[in-house]
Image 1 (spheres, rainbow, N blue to C red):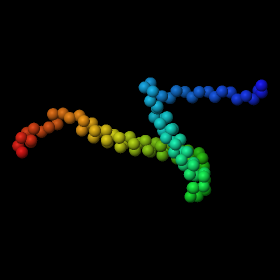
Image 2: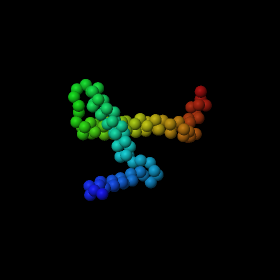
Image 3: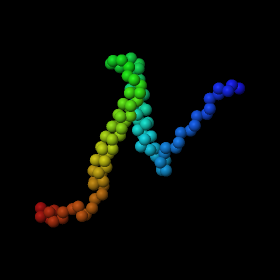
Length: 103
């Protein structure tokens, strides 16, 4: 056997939460990877408008786009969740029975 054999890669540390859900950093990384693959595919296959961007710059852009997307998603979901909570959590205290009886 040769002395140049590659060592087995060290496994990455577990990044899931105790509930088994991926961490926020994993979510950003996964989304950024998907964005990067799409951008790189368009940039390096000849469909780009001008030249080819630096791969590191493309990776940084992918992370920024992933963060922006997830922030917008949280903002939209918080508004929708609040509306659903108000709709689903009916309370008789919310009713103005005096105004209803006057009618």
